[in-house]
Length: 132
Image 1 (tube, helix red, strand yellow):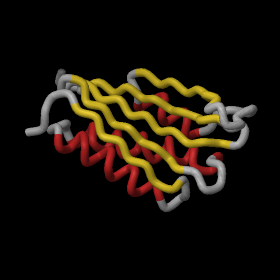
Image 2 (image 1 turned 30 degrees about the horizontal axis):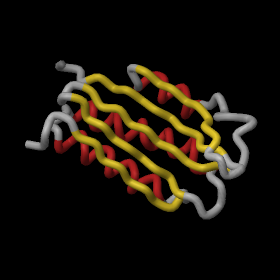
Image 3 (image 1 turned 90 degrees about the horizontal axis):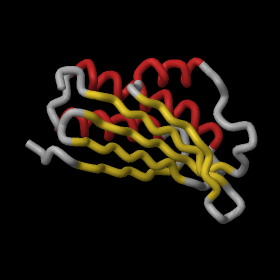
Image 4 (image 1 turned 90 degrees about the vertical axis):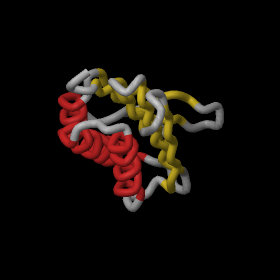
């Protein structure tokens, strides 16, 4: 069994082809930590929705980054980030965002300047283990 506190990070080209890879990595991490099937399904869906929101906004030639953190085996946080040319409009209030709000215990979205005339858009989701 993996340690109780773990972090896994994946970077991939910010294209539509990255979404299934990012989703599979996030699901594999929570699966390896013996989270229930329902929560594995939730994480797959949440990462899929985050990619659906962020990948169309990604600046050409940039990467999507997904970090999955397991905290003492009872909670996991997922952060998905892309670099965009302009984040003036922010994330659209879409069905994808509503699904993320329903799945996450805590959901934060924000734009963060990177000092290179571009911005990173981030989505961070905290999901608590149901049987904790």
